Image (tube, rainbow over all chains, first blue to last red; front, side):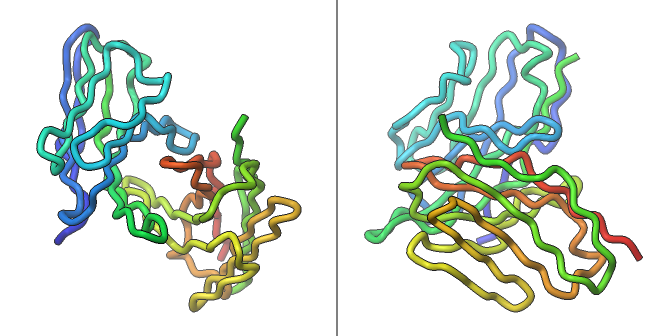
Length: 116
Length: 109
């Protein structure tokens, strides 16, 4: 397993367009997270899945954002009608919930979104 | 609310020890983490400590946890140029990680 992979690595889009990002977690990991990171800041939590169920969404995730994990494996994050404020690095992470608690979360390299 | 705080910059000479400090707020956190982020790269887990431990050592890395003061530190012994990066402290709060803004470690020759 090569770890968490994200696609694309970079995306430049015009304001108002829709974009979709994909994340492939580590195969046996049942938890998947989306975070957003802007320059000079730590990541901010957006949402998380336990298998295919989306269990929590941050208030940062406006109605323009939607995430899915249809079969409990890969996940997609879609942003509709992008705005310049959406420009950020979007990070995906996965972890394995064990009886005694999670293992650490492993991060992908992120998708850098630039809205022009 | 939840807040994790770190100094933004730390400058050390090559070969010296680096100590990066962090304060957190959620006393119920079970794990505390240190991640490293190099330019253009993803977040790499360096080490973590379980909340019932005071210290964890892993090669050049030493983590100290003071639960009473909610203070976490990362010591890097014999700092090398390859240690140049941003170091993030994070605490787990239920299902998510709460992050500091990161400390940029600058290595002087």
